[in-house]
Image 1 (cartoon, rainbow, N blue to C red):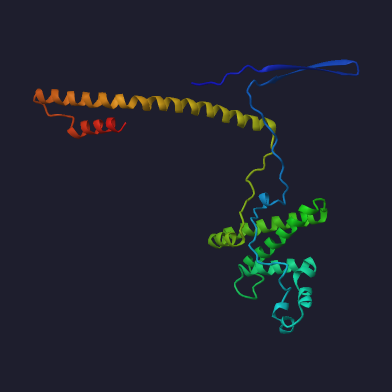
Image 2: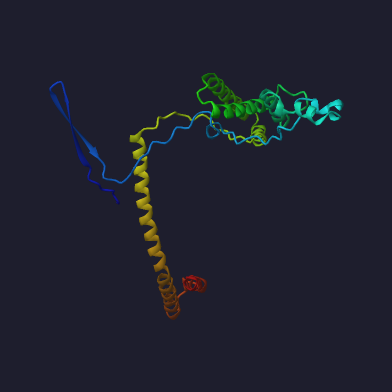
Length: 265
């Protein structure tokens, strides 16, 4: 059995407090394993929420609302037309257009605003707008709370939809370009001790795998000689059985198979 042996280093620390001296000992592993605490990802980042981005065609040159259907605006001056585009209107109009287009991707009919698909599309558009705002103003506490609540609400709705209709759940993920990340069954804190245990186990598994690979390569090199000897011995046994007028227990196919394996190697 392969055992990873190491001799720990003893570390002594002496502290003084109010005239008293205390001595502490600790063990330091000799394994060259370095653990770096993983960087904490904010909850609103797309890596956490699973938002891969909506493919919306809303640009700053588009008319806001239903102004594009106005016949008077089509014949107006270019300067007047620009005043009704999203570039010269409040940001709220752009967000509203994105929200409407996101709902149009999944809605059942033109007046569908209350179905589960429409609600999820609306929440996704709002979440992605809030994420951009949080990148600019990460200390906005009110927006942070609202965004956190909306992310959890959408995740809860996605969980319900997954239970009700899995095909519809997959379809909504594809349409909204989302990755569903359910809550883990058990929340475990990231600690140095537990992480070092896992890294040590991984290091031991790699050592065992390297030895197994080396042993496998050694056996592969010996296969050619093995099949050569096997074909010769099988042919000898068959010849002896025939000379003794016994029914042969070895067929010609077995001998030929051993020869073919020898030639292939």
